[in-house]
Image (cartoon, rainbow, N blue to C red; front, side, top):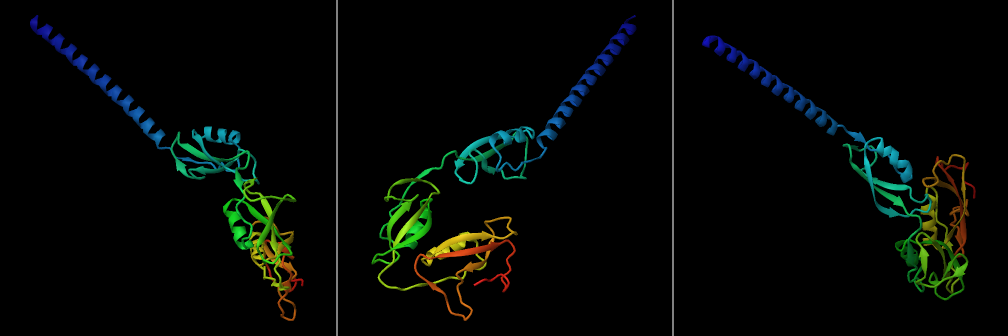
Length: 269
């Protein structure tokens, strides 16, 4: 009888141990499965979309669909772009990141920041142009007037009216510099503008006391910023090889193309 009871107890202990082992194995498998799922999820790489030129409302679903977040950390101002569009982002487009990564955004401000017109009077126009650049302003053109100090700034004009140093303007605004002609009748040589962009040509002409005139683009233009000058009027040199010289402040018209080919067919003096 005792032997029978001991056997029964033994069988029950074995069964209980088997059940405990099964439970431990099941818990282990579930834990492993959870860990693997979680590990795999956290190692999924997400490609950051290019958000530049999108508004925040347009960018938000693009990020949410990829389980990414965003923070607006800065703003700049570009007059050519709409208010609140995204100007820059970090991480950059096509960067691989993990889920829930924050994308830090720089947006375009609604209104331009304001800056103070620097001290320009009595300085040479070259120094004045550089001072305007540093302040976030631009020199639109040089207007020459009779004055003993050649190329010295004797006045500043904004939107057709004379303004004073220290006045507050929107950043990016353009002013006209009124400069002296000097007492001599000396003329300036016309520089060769072939192959330059409009921006570089404008800088070169102003540094030579001349102005950029009308700008013409041919049918090849896809990007006006990178387009290059293939013709100018007046030219820098006559057919006999003599350099062309002009009075201070004269304008040079230019023609631009995307496919630069300087040849006799396109040069029109």
